[in-house]
Image (cartoon, rainbow, N blue to C red; front, side, top):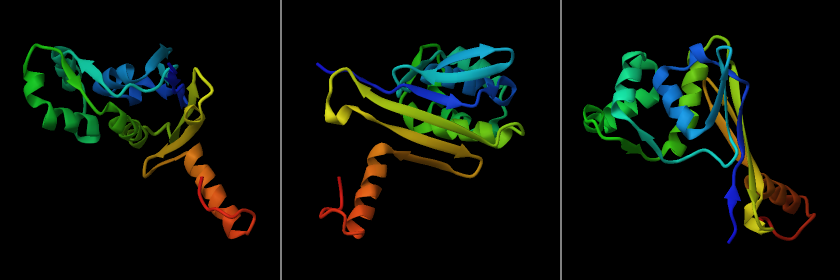
Length: 172
């Protein structure tokens, strides 16, 4: 059986003062984090987690110390998880993989010290399988999130090569 990994790094390090407590609670579960001297470094050896679990009391405490207007994470928690937040039982927060780039963008938008964040992912596999290797690069600014995988890059290369008559097919 093959194991697939997605080592991921978020750069540069982020001033912890730019991260809302509820965002740090969330990002600390999506990624591994290293906090030192008021800065936080988010990374993962295996890849960002899509499913995270929250203790409602911890989330309520973090929300009490968060500006609700500047965070899509806060809006999602209040809109879609209001009942779970009122309870005492741990709840699962699904689709974190779709939300973490937005959370990072919200941090860039609020922080006068950050113009951008980059996310670099490597796709690796424990066996030499053709679908187990590649990567993805993401540039997050206040106004846009841009990303491209090695697969989409190769598709562009093939189209350009086909248009130039270098090869006969136009996709990978």
